[in-house]
Amino acid sequence: MEMISPKQKSHVFILGKNWKLSTAELVSFLKARNHKFKITGLSKTFAIVTSEGALDASLIDDLGGTIKIGKIRSSIPLEIVEDAFLHRKKEVQAEVKERLSADHVVDEVFKMPMQKCVFGVSLYFEDSRFLRFSKEIQRFLGSYFKEELVSRGVRAKFMGFPKKRQLPQLTHVEVLKKDLIGKSAEILFCIGTGRAFASNTLAVHNPFEFQKRDVGRPVQRRIFSIPPRLAKIMANLSACLPGKVLLDPFCGVGTILQEALLLKARVIGVDINPWCVKAAKTNLDWLSRQYVLKDASYTILLGDARSLANRISEESVDCIVTEPDLGPALRHFPTEFYAKRLIDKVKPLYFDFLKEAYKTLKADGTVVFVTPYVKTRQGNFVNLNIEERAGTIGFKMVCPFDRVLSDDALLIRNLVTDSSFVDIGERHKIGREIHILQK
Image (tube, rainbow, N blue to C red; front, side, top):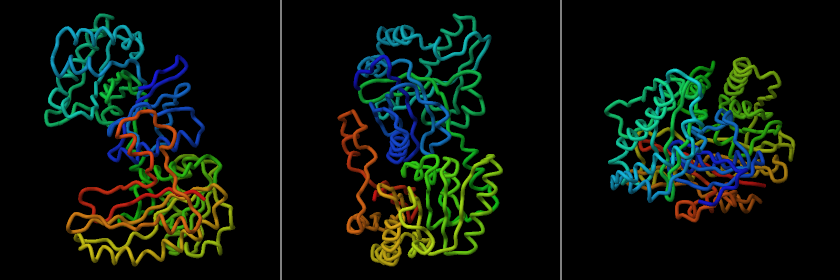
């Protein structure tokens, strides 16, 4: 990890299940808002962001792939953590306590004065060696913080976990329900490749808000609709900013439009289906009322994405974010031959869409879109190789990680050329490959 100047602040971002996509969104979000930052540590569960000045905890509401945000209060070299917990050296465990005390973690984290509190400790790590000892480490830290609080006259209770839980981590729902951010604290102990970081949670992802914008809105289209969480991620990948014009030419019931609207963009939706046009308008009207969006700007048009120029002026759009037709819903995993047929069938639609998208985008405009990623019966994947065609149209690939990664670890080096990200569940037959292109 690079040296941190006194003016710099470090935060930990606990990432969602798709860590690459979550990190790409985070980087794109901070870049678009001109934050001066570096990713100074990265694992498949968390990212360490070092920035000039503190990052506002409220940005959790604008991110779809971040579960928790914490402020780093102390860091401990990995070799000390290994000796303390993997080799169970009592004198080194005492040194861990001394380091936490020297950094005044308790006084920085807990809101004094208080008479009693309930607090939690969550452990995050990549190295499988720590799995066996993870609950022991969590109890060790819990006992340390409880003793420190008791010595300050606070009646402290340390939250436990259900016995069946594999990892000692509080869910974001538990943190919300126990109000650990407002009334007490959650300690995050994140063990990276070179150091471990002790931080306190500043903000957590609220799944209830995404649920409301999914199943709570007036009109739904469950089978074909993109999840609001992923829609938010894609909007951020496009560098969607307040006041920018965002277009979704396959808008459906308006999921991407609603997440962009919450980012204060001006949104335009186009769909070839009259029912979808009406549904999207209904949902955005509802969203504006629910979230009191007084200056919300949205327009929904009936039209064909393959002839956008008939509905959208040339070079009038800052960013395009969309999910075109991914093909038919599959009941069984297809053969490789059938998967290739599915891809070939949607190719013309995608190629025509990209040509029209290029016309409507402003110079340096960004398009973020989904192509089908089909899992075959043999366990292989068939996708739509779009890069060559996009290049002939005039697009260039965008890699979000360019110039923001400071670690030379293999995990990070492998990201610096990524311009597309796959999102597919284990049981899914058709997943999503998300591409980022720039005019």
